[in-house]
Length: 91
Image (cartoon, rainbow, N blue to C red; front, side):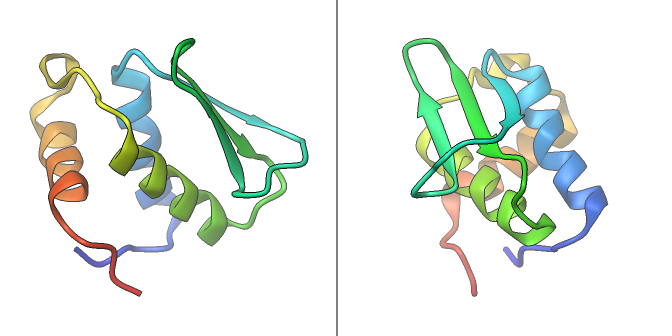
């Protein structure tokens, strides 16, 4: 899967979070990895000052590490989520 660094692709990744039980927040902070993941509270916090590319990379990395309840996702978002989970990141 080739990552697209566009606003519409960022919106697609955000839609997966919107349909899942994870809360996505953009906040300022000192994040060494660009994001902070609170798994017990199901909250993902991404540095709001990151560029579009940085935000997409963070959301992609988070989606590869968390388990999303697939039954809550629409068909379109489920396909994208499974594609993200099953493929290696391409530079």
